[in-house]
Amino acid sequence: MVNHVWGLLAHPGPELKQIQSERETVSHVYFHHVLVMAAIPVICSFIGTTQVGWNFGDGNYLPISLLTAAWIAVVFYLVMLAAVAVMGRVIYTLARRYDSRPDVKTCIVFAGYVATPMFLSGFVALYPLVWLCLFVGVIGLFYSGYLLYLGIPNFLGIDRREGFLFSGSTLAIGVLVLELVLALAVFMWGYGIRLF
Image 1 (tube, rainbow, N blue to C red):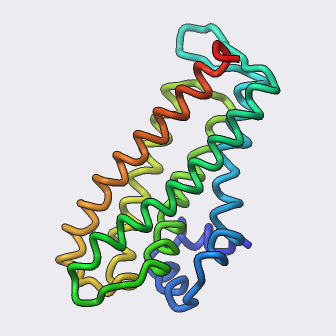
Image 2 (image 1 turned 180 degrees about the vertical axis):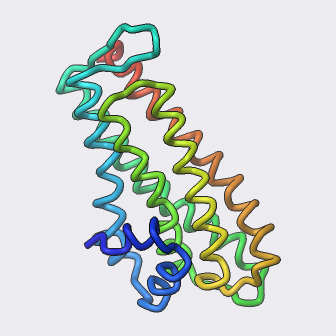
């Protein structure tokens, strides 16, 4: 199922080569990796916000009702699934100017695996302390950037020197997409209580 997770953390270079050699389809990577991994931050946020409540660092906890949290969780999950596909399309669009011209399928599969550290950082939402969630999220973002840089030569066939610029551009766009997803998540999880 999510058999590549440990490899991406322990030995990312060889693991990315292994993943690329498997030539997965988009449906396979979604059903066997992305759907499961994207559930981590959703389930942890649901549990944390309903059982503990948001902590903004002032000692007050702001819990969310089960019904509101369930609705937010569904929307949050769908947004994350869409974000992986969007980043795959971004990678595809940026990679078209290179000679290797990877296909959309390869780029979406690559994006699904590169997002793994971001998904894993969602475990911290079990105790939704805002600064802690942001800190761990930044660590996940940096590690995703590292996976992006390591995987570009194998997945996309782009030279490592050119890959540095490519990964920088992709990461910058990825940060914008992430900020949009996080802003939506903070709005939904943080202010959802007032809306419902």
